[in-house]
Image 1 (cartoon, rainbow, N blue to C red):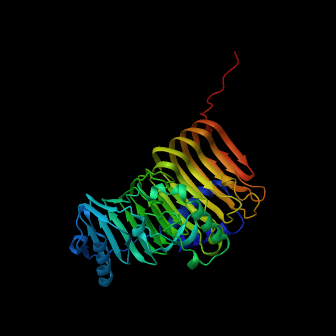
Image 2: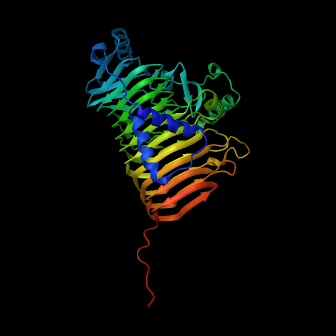
Length: 457
C-alpha cells in the first residue's frame, strides 16, 4: 500500500503543475518511486509443458523452410493452454513471420538460430502495427503477437533477421509512404483504411508485441533486423533481461517501448546501428487520440553501444513519465548519452526522469534535452512540457560538442532540473541552457576540476 501511495502521488505530480523540488529529499523520493514501479513488474508466467519444434517437422539444416512447423507448434500450444516451444541446436530457416499465441515461451537453446527469409512478400498480408508513431497496417513483424498475455522469448540462441539484402535497402525509397502515413495521422484517417505493405517501402520490426500483457524477453542474441529490433507497443508488465545485440543495419534500434508501461530493462549488451533504448508514445494526432503514456520504465546495469544510449522521443505525443536509468556503462561509442527530443508538433509531456551513476567514454553530447528537435513545428503551438529531472553521477571522458544542453521554448520552458556530481573530462561547450526555469548544478566538474588556487609570488 505504501508503494502504491508513493506511485500515485508522483503520477499526480506528473500530470499537474510541476512541484517545487526540495533537492535534499529528491533522491529519496526517486528511490521510493522506482521501488514502487519495480513492485508492479513480474514478466510472463511460463508453462511447465514443453514441446520441440522438431517434432512438428522443423529441421535445423538452414535449408528446409520451418515456418509450417512453428505455426503447427503454436496451434498445439494454444490447444494445450500453453507450452514452452523448444528450438534445439541448429539453424532453422523460416520463410515468413512467426505469430505468437498466449501462454507460449519460445525457448531458443544455445547453438540454435532462427533465421528469417529476407523475401518481403512472405510477410504479407498486412497486420495491425505502427510505424514511427503512426498506427497503420503494414508488413508483419517477423515475430509478432497482438492482444496476448504471458508470452516470452528466452534462451542463449540467436534471432537473425537476415534483412541486409532487401529491407535494409529500403530507406531511400520510404519517403512517399512515410509522408502518406503522416498525412493520414494528421487527417485522422480511420486505421482500417491505412493499408500499406507492398509498394510503400515501410520496413517491419523484427519483434513486436502489440497490446500484450506479461512479457519476458531474456538472453537471446539479436542481429540483422529489418527495422527496429524489439518494439513493445501498447503493452505492459515487461522484462527485457540479458539480451545481446549485434544489429547494425539501418534503424536497428535495440528496444522501443511505445505507449507501454511497467517495464524493466536490465543487463543488456547493446551494439546497435541506431538508438539503444528509444521510449516513445505515438506521433502527433495518433499519440493524442490512440496512444497512452509510456511510463514506469527502469533501465539498469546495461552496456551501451550505438547511436544514442537512452532516448525519449521524438514520437512522444501521449507523454513519457517515470523513467529511471541507473548504474549503466558503455561497451563502445555513443553519440549521445541521455537524449530528450521533441518539438512544437508533438505536445504531450516528459517528466520524472531520474539518471543515477552512468558513465560513457567519448560522446558528442552527454545530456541533451531539446524542445526544438529537427527544427520542425516552429509555427505550431503543441508545446511539450519537460521537467522534473534529476541527474546524479553522470560521467564521460570527453564531450566533443556539449556537456549539458537544455533547450526549452518561451511558451514552455524546461523546468525543475538538478544536475549533481557531473564529471566531464573535456568538453567543447560545457553548458548551454535556453528557456529554462529552476535549474540547479551541484558538484559539477566540466573540463576537469579546478583544484587549489595558485598563490601570488
